[in-house]
Amino acid sequence: MTTAARTAPRAAGPQSTAAGPRTTAARRLLALGRAETTLLLRNRTALFTALVLPLVLVTSLRSTLQKQAESNPGLDVHSLLVYGSVGMALAFVVYYNLTAAYVGRRGELVLKRLRTGEARDLEILLGTAVPSLTLGLLMAALIGIGGSLGLRLAVPVNPLLMLIGLGLALATMIALAALSSAFTRTVETAGITTLPVMLVMQLGSGLFVPLEVMPGRLADVCRLLPTTPAFQLIRLGWFGTDGSAAPTGFAGSWGAAAPHLATGTVWLGLAVWGAVRYFRWEPRR
Amino acid sequence: METSQLSRPGDSVIEVTGLHRHYGGGTTGYHAVRGVDLTVGRGELFALLGTNGAGKTSTLEVVEGLAAPTGGSVRVLGLDPFTERAAVRPRIGIMLQEGGFPGELTAAETGRAWAGMTSGARPVAEVLELVGLGHRAGVRVKQLSGGERRRLDLAVALLGRPEVLFLDEPSTGLDPEARAAVWRLVRDLRAQGTTVLLTTHYLEEAEELADRLAIMHGGRVVTTGTVAEVIAGRPSRVSFELPAPTGAAGTALPVLPGAEVAVEGRKVTVQTTTLQDTLTDLLGWARHHGIALGALDARSASLEEAFLAIASEAAHQDPPQTPAAPARPARPARRRLIGSAR
Image (cartoon, chains in turn cyan, orange):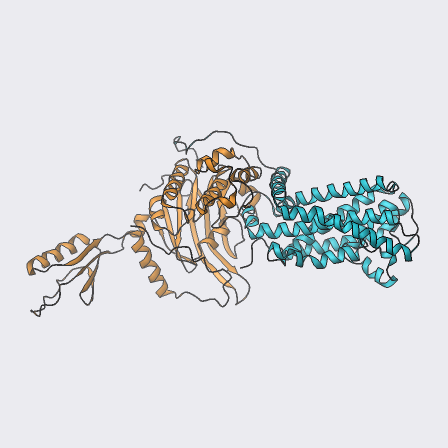
């Protein structure tokens, strides 16, 4: 087959021979993540929600925990305060913020346009999540490390388990954000449509109200909620206990983590399935 | 208009065979594309024309690999654009009818992000210059005019120097000057060997640019060929007004061989395949009888007339189906109807 039969034509306008490299998934994620970060930094409302709201909640969390400690002697208020704050920062910055981002990009037809390029669907979703994840992890690290040092908390019992829990929590929240965006028409209504998951995460995952101060049966139900296992894994790895038993060491924490790992993985699978099934790349018209 | 010397058989870049596309399931769905065959050769510029809802965009989306066909097969550069998209995408460029870029990014930032996602991307400044947006690089997308946004969309499609370029109504929303610039650019790209498949509402655009074209109606290709081939066989038209009747012996119209005459009051329309002969007979008759023909107009067949005739013929043969629940939305009202400035 000949393709070179044509004589060299006049170039179309000013032109160089410079051409970039072949793209890779990493390059595409980076390019998209950079653009999304610029967008987040220019969006004052989103920045405010992501940065200030969790801090407001931390102060109310502190007084709630202190009240609960009065009727539950032995409750480790300091540990739970730092742990709950990390969880809430993640919930706001990753889940809520990302839901709004997906809805916004879909509404502007940005997702539709991106799908015409070389980026795969998963890369588009993850690339959009880059700033939310970065900011969320940054805040979690800041609160976690700063809080631990300031309140003289013990060194994490099982850091590996913490990381697994963190990874599970983030993956589940990304999938839930994609799923929630399917039921959200505009960025403005994201506050309402994310409310159920936000409430479940804050009240049912042991972030705002530790599961051990709940009535036994309610706590059992809460342990089965979508994001509870991931957060309980973080807590187990950090303090060696999820509040239902005495603290254990590195080896013992794995045994206690097994049921959370199982339920957490099932929920992640369900959330991903739901996201794949319901996610919309274009606005419904 | 020259026809591409490179579109020889066996060197087709786009091959569509028996394409069907159905939205939604069962009887409630909408059958948007109903058996389309298209072949576009290397270096050829092919225009897809059609009335609203003819299935142009639905066809294009499948060829671009954005959706799987319901039936039939599509090959782009010898590959399946849907299942082998990772291999096809780096070699093609796509401009959607309604593309989306975040409003808060500047044109340059948008280009940079896309360059990071495009294999062999050329410098962003170069491609913005190419579409005449060099001076608007630092402006946020939301502050660009509609026409500038279309050109940014085109710039993104051109980033990777694609072998095949898909343009869905590229000049809609552009002012005449910008449209002429886009035409120049598309012509230059073609001259460099880029294969272009475009849809358009402007018949003038197809006449200007296309090596070959297809006219779609009701999800099918009604006619295809070069502009000359599509127009060929279409009748020329002569129209005029007879003077007010004087009560004198009715001067009957002359016999015009091979022509079809329609009289409506004083207004006469003659359709003929032999324009010169018909006109000679008609004018000879008018001089002989001393009749002044008012509003005399004679014109050869144009693409526009061919298009309108084909569309109305097709509509008679195949009344447009009215789906119970069209999955495709009605088009925005701002889009103007078929028509040209000529």
